[in-house]
Amino acid sequence: MEDAITKKRMLSGIKPSGDLTLGSYLGAIRNWAQRAEEYDCFYFMADLHAITVRQNPADLRRRTLEQLAQYIACGLDPQKNTLFIQSHVHQHAELGWVLECYSMFGELSRMTQFKDKSAKNAENINGGLFTYPSLMAADILLYQPDLVPVGEDQKQHVELCHTIARRFNGVYGDVFKIPEPFVSKVGARIMSLTNPTAKMSKSENEDTGRVLLMDAPETIMRQFKRAVTDSETSVRFDKENKPGVSNLMTIYAACTGKTYQQIEEEFSGKGYGEFKPAVGEAVVETLRPIREEAARLMKDKAYLESVYRDGAQKAAYVAEKTLRKVYKKVGFVAK
Ligand code: ATP
Ligand code: LTN
Figure 1 (cartoon, protein in one colour):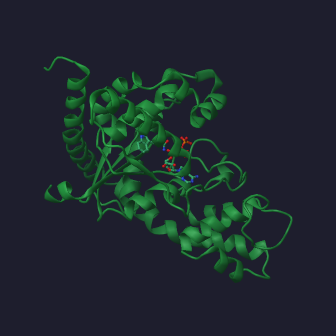
Figure 2 (tube, protein in one colour):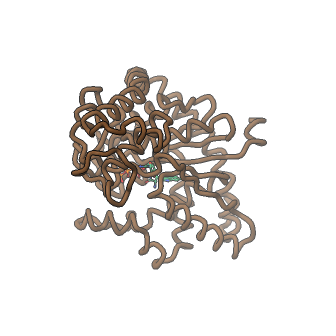
Figure 3 (tube, protein in one colour):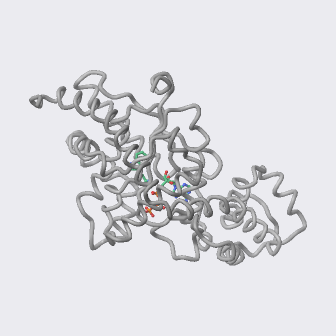
């Protein structure tokens, strides 16, 4: 607790709307794990956000627990990070409502994710899908974090969180700390292997386009051998003209720590037939320890339960303080 007072705070979440992918790992979780010593960290499973798209209840429950096991397996030590399930901390939904009243219709309408998801779920364009960013602002502002590490696609939401926080502070004084989005340079946007102009997503691409954290090595190798490239033969970074190869280079760079130049040199004169399996192998080796540890943890439900219970208690302690302050500021009568 002493430490928590002096350390800067960091927070992020992922919705358990599908099995975690290589994109979730390279774009988000890996960057979280690297900062556990430096920051007081809060990470959660955003189950409230997940139901903005229809979920099968049994799958949602299973995935939420698996996601926790995978967070831990990716290096988020529950002793050093507060890991919790969003719906266990009721303050999120409560502040979410308040912030909806400080989010403008026009702003919410402009969110790319809303436009994308409404186009893809035309039969279920619900209110939650629309006000998703207000709840996300609540997730963030409850904890007053300094940094919010996310992939490129979530930056717009964190920016809207700024706008909402500034608007609220403008009326009531300095209630919320204004957080910074943090998008890491390598791996910020991993694309689908079969459609490299679309993001690798856990709920949207066809199975061939994505690699799951829990995929077996043979499956991973098969996916990479099938990855879409182009009609040239040279391994060269050119996002515009060679999106498939550039995406594979990004993945290879993220898994090996090599620069694009080093990769171009390594594969100069060699064709995609050598490059694709090399990327596959690098991914297999990166994911192997995570898959094994997550599978082991999934068998220990009692341990996972103790982690999320503990996490929710710590999170609620911090969240409640902010919520009380907000309720007071807006003029609600104290209990
Ligand atoms: P869904 O398909 O349900 O919309 P998703 O796969 O897009 O989900 P999110 O839960 O939206 O994943 O994202 C979790 C975190 O991982 C976010 O910070 C997001 O920016 C990051 N992320 C997700 N996919 C990628 C990707 N392909 N490349 C880089 N970062 C990603
Ligand atoms: N919208 C995010 C998940 C998310 C989140 C957050 C991320 C919900 N609340 C707060 C950072 C901070 C997503 O789709 N990945």
